[in-house]
Length: 220
Ligand code: TMP
Image 1: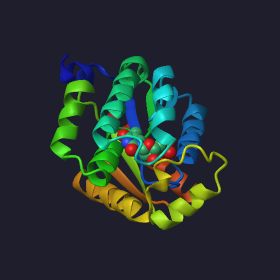
Image 2: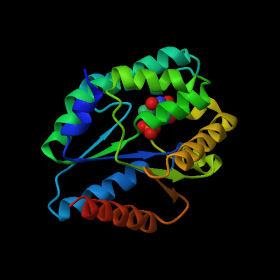
Image 3: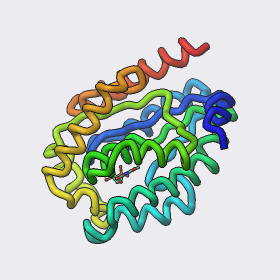
Image 4: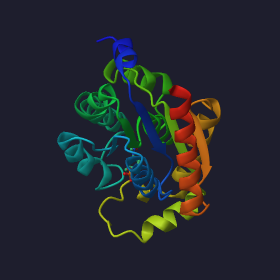
């Protein structure tokens, strides 16, 4: 299936949110969704791992259990499988309708967690993305940048204590994740918009909203 077919025919705007643990992505997605909906813009919010019924089932296996329950290659294949379902069933149909899609994590998480954290060759991961996931990239990626120690402390106060397989990988691993996102963001600075996640929720949401509105206006 041609990648170009997917990219050329989409009318909507695809926005992803990335960063390490506890950076506040889901709060920001909810706030942006509310603000855009008030402006009568059609918005769909979704997440990875997850996004579809099947993807949510795979999520359970990936985010719970022992840290070494999956080999990193198997893990990468599972992320690609759930992403392909997600693109086919949710993301592309919404983009074709012209909606704004807000996605909590996408390909960049695989590049950083499985690539940088798990030491899988980046060329291999990019090739999986090209062959299985239509080489689809977000139009905008918000990188919420935070000291991993602060982020991990924040996740400790969460209610959900079963979804902690990645959190349990330790500070050294999470420092690699933060550094990996920072490097990826610097390298792709047209698509990425880096935000200091230590700022107040309101300041962060204002920066995100202003950037999205400026992109919408420049696309009109
Ligand atoms: P979440 O806590 O942001 O919902 O994400 C669940 C975990 O999944 C998080 O620790 C990062 C991990 N993850 C990967 O390792 N690779 C991926 O491609 C994605 C989408 C998530």
